[in-house]
Image (cartoon, rainbow, N blue to C red; front, side):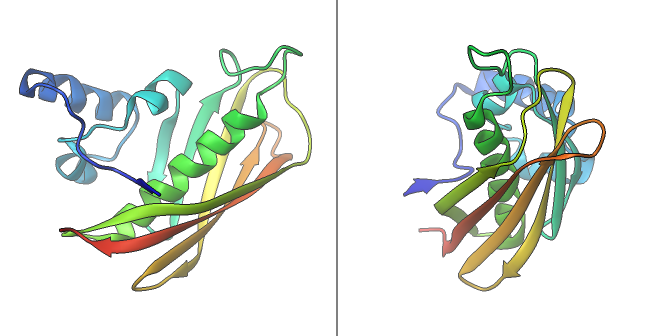
Length: 161
């Protein structure tokens, strides 16, 4: 199991960089203090994921196709899953609240169509927000609103040690 949203093992001098990372990724101002110690993560930055809306019930972000393609020139299937897991994990962590954390325990995706350019939008919607489990469905669409893939992610909610 992977612990989601654990503090980054970086020098304190990078705290200012992490705050800028949060701004650049579109994290709403009210969530920045919560994420200031960990940022959004290197993979989120590398993939170009930008948050549009963030809550436990619904989280929306975009990701460019450019730079995230496979050899055939279309968005890599793994990039779909990275976006889905990012959204589900952040939403579950928001739901977990103070002194708790989310641990991803399952993710699966079905790819419906390919895309070779533009922005992909991922929308995670809560299916279950319980005391110990959070389940989100994540739908990725292209700029025309066509469904590209559907994923489901389950996170275990645990108390901090």
